[in-house]
Length: 220
Image 1 (tube, one colour):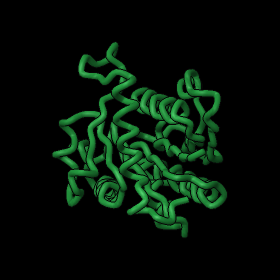
Image 2 (image 1 turned 90 degrees about the vertical axis):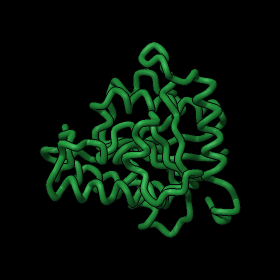
Image 3 (image 1 turned 120 degrees about the horizontal axis):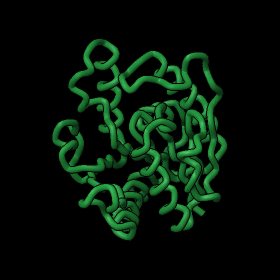
Image 4 (image 1 turned 45 degrees about the vertical axis):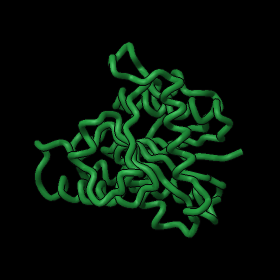
């Protein structure tokens, strides 16, 4: 059975759109026969309400002043991300994951885990709320966050966006074959949404591309 580690963002417990995205991805993977672990800053009722019972949710220890990091890049978000990196590195060292799938700044955590471990595995960077399109966020911390976000995109086996308008603003030095647009499968929210079947088919193609043997012959 293939195994995947999903890495939520540092604000996943407060982001309804990301919560839906995680639930959709996890549901598709479980239906396809994958073993799924989900790394989160902390579990929330919103996230676990419709999450498959087969998904193992792994939280990280709470830090003072980190329970609700702001939307902008901040020291609090960095601290939560650091805790997720440490927990994620331990998970990767003990489990035979075929792939790691990071959501929003969880993709930065996935990139850090990839650099810190000896295991060879592909990771996917999935963005519904990237730092790079927030033009109002300026300053040193925002610049650092955008730098690491671009690095996560460049080195990811695949990059996913939820809409077609965002990639031209962000994707730099990333081969077009590695960039995909997969709208959320929620037609009740957005008319242009995918059906669940379309979402599952698109995700399956990306996973097949990201985990192909010619790129990761020693994948776990």
